[in-house]
View 1 (cartoon, rainbow, N blue to C red):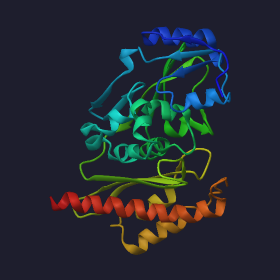
View 2: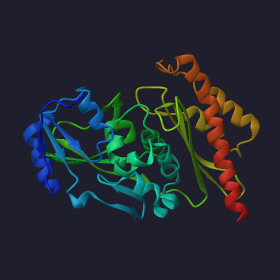
View 3: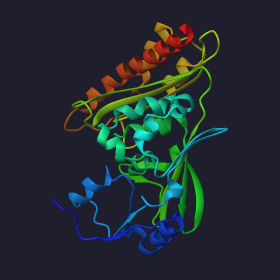
Length: 293
């Protein structure tokens, strides 16, 4: 299929883009990488009056390390972040999740912010943002505002971005020196959509005790889900077998994952604990590798 007719705009500055958003309001869509948007246009699920390409807004093309973390501008390509040593050092969970997104060609065009703003409940980067309490910088005709990950994601393909606004940047907090992270998922095929995925970020003290544990999952709700009960169980442990097993067992408690074509709710609940275990074991293995160097 082909998209419905729309007006195309290619502003060269953020101010111009915001002015266009003000003109068209809810009838406008922002285009950056287009990896999520274009298929929806072709299937006419979205039929905007105007498409606003921000690809000529050079001021949005940045990936920088700040004292308190990593900031991805609206035009930071996923491939750029994936290959960045700064991302690996500052935000290892983001680095771990990026290779799971589509194929190389998708990541060459797709943007970090675009994936987050699309808010697909199976998008890997939403789990990263939720686990790390990422901050979202939203700009619009009424100025700028900040939103936490919990405030940002509202439901399937739905965020707190209002008509006349766009996602300008996302800020991931800086990881500690003893941090390790892993992302794991099961899907219907390699580089296909995830069925369930888990992101794990762990920071240990010098003797291997978990000081910080952050876990989140995709595929078990309409938004990414923080696995807080599992985090509490693991906090202050070394990830011993008993604590790990208990954390895995409670991961799906109080969750009612939506069933789908590739997996029903019971399967998703069952596999969630397995993925929590895999992710945590991977973080432990990475930590031991660092210590052995």
